[in-house]
Image (tube, rainbow over all chains, first blue to last red; front, side, top):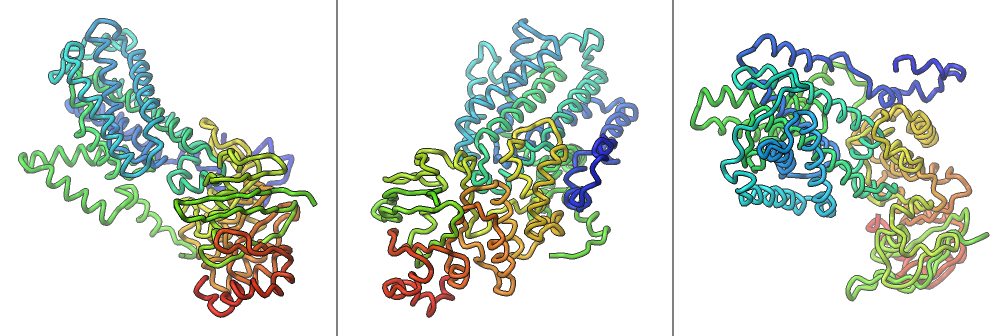
Length: 346
Length: 255
């Protein structure tokens, strides 16, 4: 990839290719020096905190879930408050198949979870994405509520409010067993799944398709005016996002060995939104930063004020919403930009 | 000259309001045509009918003789009808180059590609850069839209439309909101448009209209009031009464 210039040497390097804007666009997808850092940290965590791996894989699953939301909300600008619908769809797919002894092989189960969540995403997206703004927000909420109530009422199959306990999940690849006391397998398995999904999302957002999604987010009307099939693009994006959320849900069911209604709840949908806003949406790594910040903060706040820890979180959110619309990563970007001199301001 | 874009008895009503009424209009190939009229005359509604944002209550729209009345907006763009907006509709958070990239990528069919990086479509970037060069925007290519002064944003508005390589270009007040010191940049760009494009310009700015247009259509209350060369329109007493008179005395209000 680095040597891509060589076959074009026959032509002299065109003047346009030296333009700063063109160079930015050409090299945007290339790996930056710091991009391996989160993965190295995740590995370091594995060795440094063997007793916290339960916390660790929970964090990784939140990152994956937030990443799926970032694709829909951060990049395409689809306002949703019901993303747990897909998380739950994935979780219940894994749960139902395993509990009723139909299928429990981990990796193929995750693929099935993705498939089912994608179907739910596609079916609801075809209807919902005709609307925008508040209507869309309410409809995503309704979709999730319908699924939750469905899972509640289908008591005979889903266990209703109690959910499906003690799922039997065989070892990953027949080798790595899930041990409820030591979460080594759960952690590494979640990490690998996260890497695979992350690479997919990263490829998508740096592609011309991803660029067109940001175009839709920035100005839907103009996208129509340049002849873009806006609704198709959005439905496809929503479906992919749902599939990834489904994988996150399936992973949650497998690693915890149970499923319950919380996977479909508003609590989860709101939390993932908070994580993404906290970290910075439309930034690929916002999911990482947000999930870590949220999990660590809630961990320590809960210790400090066991009864009112959510108050601290709420205050932080208010501050972010008022002063740092682009989240923690947005603040970091602004600080970095201030250090590198800029030639001319607006 | 052959007719590029035509309307036949085109009408659009919003309830009791007849925004466009029985408009029969022809835009010739390579035309430099202006559409003028007082505020509320239905000019923008007419543009929305031509581009397929609105569906007419009656009448037809034809492109090169083909009936496109029922063709969707996105499809009309593919057929060669592009427009700019009176109020900037840009991708504000993106760079100038990205703004044009998006439009060119849609035209050449690159925009649905999910698995190649944006930068791998050198042809799209090259074409977008050539457009920016032409509009003297190349040095701003890396700036986000919000970093640009309004006048230069208007040029991006134009660049996005040109990225679609239209055969019909509809310019909705291209110089609106631009300080007069900067408006010559817009005018030069409009002047330099490829000769084969049929251009319909909507404007209140009479200097611009009379300088640019070879033909002028005057619209009043949704209907065609007069049509002719700038000379004929300038000499038309009725037009002067309903429009030009107003424009010269109260033109600033219409800006």
